[in-house]
Image (cartoon, rainbow, N blue to C red; front, top):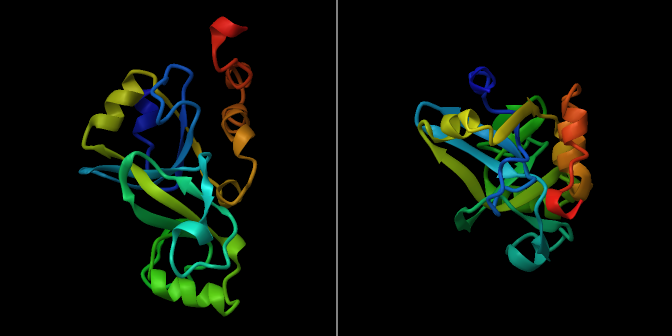
Length: 187
């Protein structure tokens, strides 16, 4: 698993292994948006909240999609991923055609004027973050699998099956892991 960690960079997916039982990350799929010597930052992709974006964030009245729990760090902050780095100033490309952040007021204006469709943006409350060396230790403990990220996965609404489908996409023995029950004792 340490060798897998050496390939970690922005745009990679972290998939919680069946060993990771901590409630914030159990059966989650995260997109890494930043990884460097100081640490790592990403967003949980498969934890939609009961709140809609339009109910929780001022200026985004058109977005009926759920707000997502991005992670347990700074849950009083809002972050967004989008596919329109060509028109949103300050965006950072994470994957080809997928961007993180940018000018939130400009984003609101572009959505309200129809330049950007709500389906091209995903909003997150908080984020997942690791200090230098912390994530590497978690890889050594077998807490995470890694996979290639894709823009399609970011904007899917198949949250319930995202973990198993992403694990299964790794092939080989992972196909069996993807079918493991969440609570093995209940099998």
